[in-house]
Length: 77
Image (cartoon, rainbow, N blue to C red; front, side, top):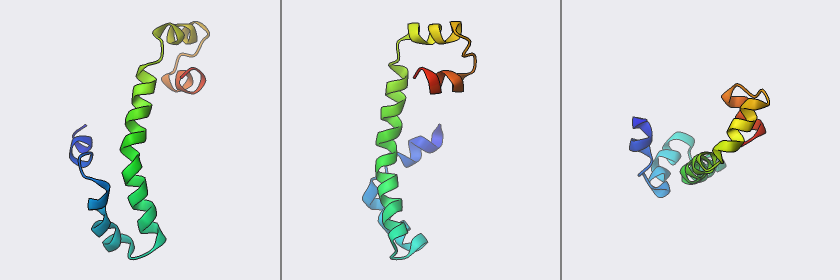
């Protein structure tokens, strides 16, 4: 998505002024900066792990009746 391409390259420290403006000098600002800093790492690691699941396991899940993508995600991946 285009929003990912825009926001992803912004380093975590660049969000500090925005966090101070939005939250003030509060613990919520620190939580925001940490969350933004680790979000993309976790997002792309999760995406890579899901794409790395063996396709045979996905077929077995379909054979056992897990038709929806959410059910397969929760039970198999």
